[in-house]
Amino acid sequence: MVVLEIMFWLAIFLIVWTQLGYALVLALLARLRRGPARAFPPVAEPPRLTLIVAAHDEEQVIAAKLANALALDYPRERLEVIVACDGCADATAERAREAGADLVLELPRGGKIRAQDAAVARATGAVLAFSDANALWEPAAARALVAAFADPRVGYACGQVRFVAGDAGGAAPNQEGIYWRYEMAIRGWESRLSSITAGNGAIYATRRDSYLEVDPIMGHDLSLPFNMVKRGLRAVYVPEARAREKMVPTLGGEFARKRRMMSHTWPILLRGGMLSPRGYPPGYAAMIVSHRLLRYGSPALHLIALAANIALLALGAGTPYAITLGLQLGLLAAALAAGPLRLRPLLLARYYVLTTASPAAGLWDWLRHGTPASWEAAEGTR
Image 1 (cartoon, helix red, strand yellow):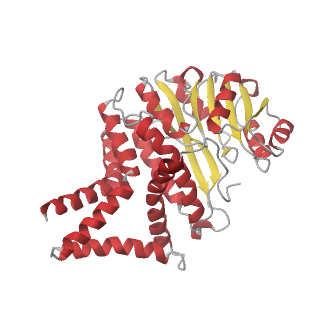
Image 2 (spheres, rainbow, N blue to C red):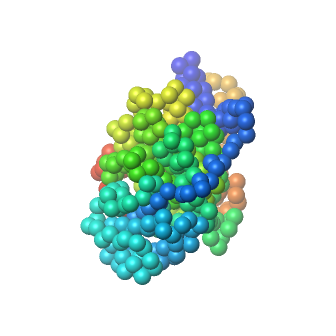
Image 3 (cartoon, helix red, strand yellow):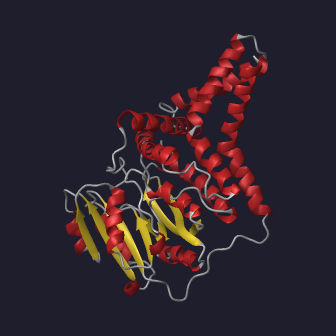
């Protein structure tokens, strides 16, 4: 029974740590650090910037994306916009040219990463920025993002993405917006103390001479930040660089999106070098374990906690274990009830259960049939 108790409480501790405790400790350490958090000061003469948009069949949104890019508060003579069409079978390339892209590449289908690599090979900017076709930047976003590179230690900068819920507003089944506000707060604390452990595809940038070509199934969001740290550079979060994206409207669609993302994440984690401590400062290594390894391992931790709890009760454990089992089953019941009852607490429970299950589903997909380099737009995000 002692072994089961250790397994149970260790699993519970690790779940609470990765989901809540880690963030609380980061917030405390950031607060104790001397001096207020400061934005990167704007540069008087911004460097030449290349904005790269990898697109696959984005004819619905590419013109709006180009209009948004060309309306940025950035000197037009120093801004280059490249659209890399990844095997587009629609009018994406034609509409991108009509909308004013400086360069449109029509490439065979090879996946987002290879489309970005092809655009980088043709880019002329000292700083390379990347964005999704459905992500719209605020006018000041480019200047704010580029300002981070005035610090020679910075190799990667990620902006703040806000997810728009659409017509359903706060009653939308998908609670991704709440999750991302929490995630962005964590990245702010990570950035202040060391470097961020992941970025996002909506708004990020890197120096031209720091760009790293990675395996086509290993996306930039997770691969670039930790690799920058291994090369002695910082990966930072710039909240003043803001973008917005339309979120997936349903939880089923969100689960499918996260499942696909996790099928790309596991190769990075297990064979892409993320778990190797070589090149990490001790604090950053602790961040990787706390925010990445344990987060992605949460499905296994939940199963261990549930199985150990049931076994302890079968062996005659006391009332505390009946309470903990009730709490675990209550979470599952709340997630199930969110189907007919669209109440925010229930929707949050369902979001947590499904997104916690997605790493396991993504791992299964990767182990069973590998991960394709190509991608499709998530349901309802265009």
